Image (tube, rainbow, N blue to C red; front, side, top):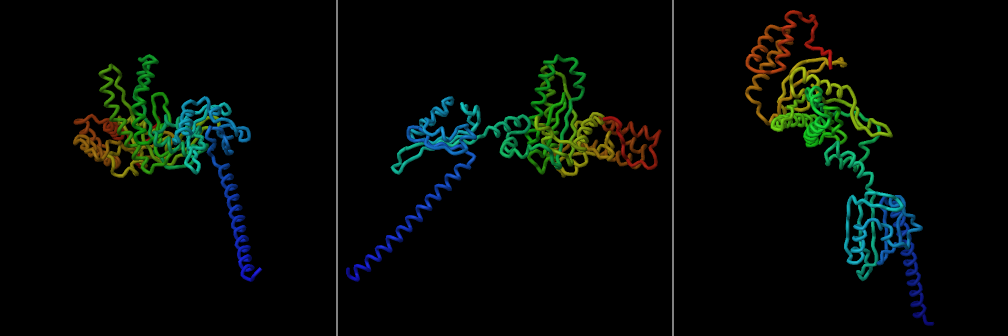
Length: 440
């Protein structure tokens, strides 16, 4: 063997050795990649089923057992159609995917599975193609949406669709227990409905209430509020939870005004139908509240509790006493800026609460100019309230009497009567302007 031949052989041996090293390295890399992919697929929370061109199952991942009730060791070799034989629509799409190479995506599909029962799932069908671009199988992915669908269905009666979608995607909003947040509550109650219900049959009463609640709840949802409950003829709503809204107080006020306006329209419709002319009173209050699932592990009950919730309920009751349609608390007034027309009504201490609060009548959205009559009443009432707090009972009474002579304003009647009482029986010298309500 010549020197040149030896040199060429050595180079060839070195080349073969390097080629072998590359081959071994790539083989290891491929094996590691397959192991990694297999491990990844096994941990995916989506059921994956791969078939051949005849729809015979070749492999499944671990999630198939949890989602579909299929044993990976027993299902291989079975025809896909037998697994989903109770779902004709789905089978039709599988056949089209295998025969024509069509892709399908179906959301919130109800499935009946012999091994699992009924589930709701998002399903995708993707044909598998070989190197010649021929169909050689089908990849089916199934994402379990049963719990998400349950949440959306359960909550759609209490929140608008935009909010229920968020809740369904993040159930942490509904975890057992509560957390403190600043929110706004709205209470609405029909005036005199108890007396009216005595004149109606049970069927008439339920139908009437149902029609009324449908209208009012739609307006709560329009501002993305959460319906807490109906209790007899009372409606309670929460703004700012479960999905937080920084402008929750404004949303509650807009809802209250819309409810008042709509009820006026309904009274005209009901008059034509011979139905009773219902009126409502509303209380709105803002403050820190404990909010969350306040039920138990056996019964879900989403709601709010706290001092400011109770105050909201008290304000609704005070609306009847002062003859107003909508009363809001001081906290609410402080965060709605100049977006609404309001007037201060009184400085009170409600039953069951030591801290006094200023209460305000919500008149309208600021974008709507107040009628001159309402503007004049509001200004004069404010002048009378100032004299009242200065203990000038006679001066305050003269202003309130002047309003009474020209307008029918219920809060003015209340304050005029109180001035008459204080003229004859003045409060103590340390009186701070607070009127204490003894009843709810």
